Length: 146
Image (cartoon, helix red, strand yellow):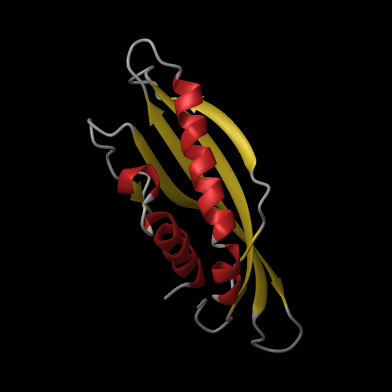
């Protein structure tokens, strides 16, 4: 398995551990549709990975990978969509912080100060979006990127 795929799987598993964040509406694909009845959702996707090769032929590389964690919150006509998305972000961040040691033991060093970007779902103004960009350092084997 690619190291980057394993990273997304580890983050997803942390968010889905009981009690699951966003009621379990967590997926590793941006294209996974959000259920029309879901008040909260989280989508994980890779943005970029920058390797820093160690010395030696076919030596592994230390990789800095950026992961976007899209936190979506849906409100009724009177709610604040940004606040709803912020509540999802808070739950995500709290869960990832609580699992930082386990992620570290699995070889993923999660930096707990994400870049944040706010957005809105164009098709539905009742959906607020906060995109948290986390940086993770990990080792990648040169011969197969595992």
